[in-house]
Length: 130
Length: 115
View 1 (cartoon, chains in turn orange, yellow):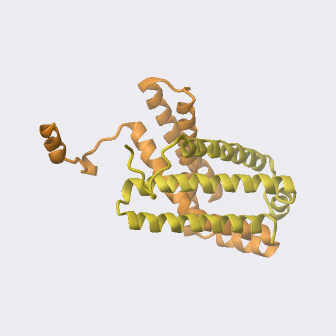
View 2 (tube, chains in turn brown, red):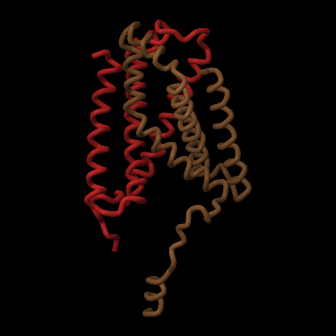
View 3 (tube, one colour):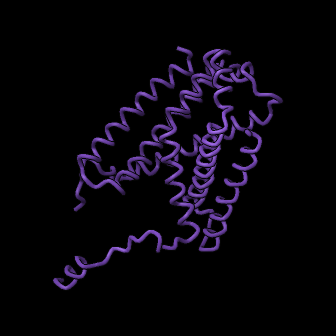
């Protein structure tokens, strides 16, 4: 017991992030967290946009003009990716919870799909937005 | 014995389930609105406000936003529990996030019903 306790105390922490090699599902997972945080922080902006878009034709036009700036468009595309990744990674988790995905191969293949589909849709919608 | 702390999780299935139910609600709403947008030949002010003019759409939009806020709360709490250790800082962040989300609820009602 004593030995075990001492071992626990001296157990090294491997937190050299650049040395940790995540499996594909690990990247989907951490990006799900990152994209969720981005979306949460963007909430006031998104609500303000909804507000301005519905208030009147003037505020709608103003908003459209504002969103036409290159930097704003880049930020929008970033948020679009965050949304799409969070959406598809979330659907993957729901599928896992419903036991629709099986084994390591299922985890890997679905991770690849989530990363690919969200990136591809970001490009397609981003090009359209630009 | 689980060490229950005020800034921890609720040690049960409720939040876990709520996160998934709210996710499903949002997925249905977003798919419906995205499908609607794809069917529109042009997305201008008239079509946009027409979509939000009925009480049905306003109610489902509010349901979507309430699901989003609850979902966001669970997600933010999970992130804070993982990376923020001092209970005082955690509590401060938790209270700030909850208050912000409650303000968003009020704001969402004002936006949707044009107040």
